Amino acid sequence: MRLRFVISLAAALTAPLWSQTPAAARSSAGPLAAFSQSLESLAGRVGPAVVQIVSTGYGRGDVAEQGASSVLTRQRSTGSGVILSEDGFIVTNYHVVQGARKIEVRLAAGESGIPQEPVMLAKLIGVDRQTDVAVIKIDRTALPHLSFGDPKNVHVGQVVMAFGSPLGLAGSVSMGVISSTARLVHEDDSIAYLQTDAPINPGNSGGPLVDTGGQVVGLTLSS
Image 1 (cartoon, rainbow, N blue to C red):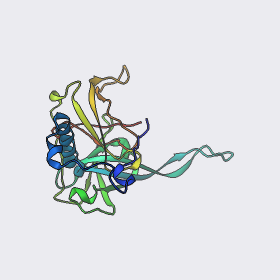
Image 2 (image 1 turned 90 degrees about the vertical axis):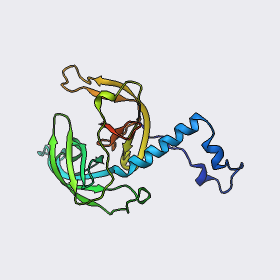
Image 3 (image 1 turned 180 degrees about the horizontal axis):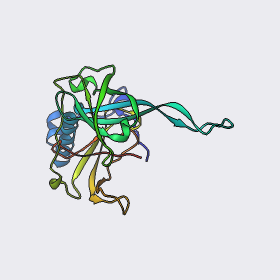
């Protein structure tokens, strides 16, 4: 799956080709405008609690040299995470930080109310390999954070939004619906997954899938 880009008219046009719609008219333009504004508000509330994660470690890589089958190489991967407490506990996918010797976290950009941080080091707190979940922590307080929703309230057809850093592009969001609430990827899987048609790309892994109330209903997985 590829990310789709559209040129912003605000950046492409030096002067408007039509008259501006007054804010009052925009706010009373009907249910579609109200729906759009509710999504904008949701993105504004959720975005500050989503982080970009960069993990660095070492792994074995194949080499072409005669007589050598593998060599230890430096490996770097990126993913996403969601802050779950004001004192810096973050949940992400285990595979995002698997084998990491160093875990770096970047908070949301300044428009979210948090000054842009260079990079913050994180400590691995715990992992669950079976569910592909990991908890890390940064040394920071008074952080925006989200809470988990009730799994019993997740239904097929429900509108959800996926937040994260697809392809390393921090602060991205996509929208879709819940396609299935109990999807077995393989017949012998012991865990049932949520399935969504919200666009998810490499780098989204560990980012939150949230409902319209801004509660986390799952963590996104990308191939």
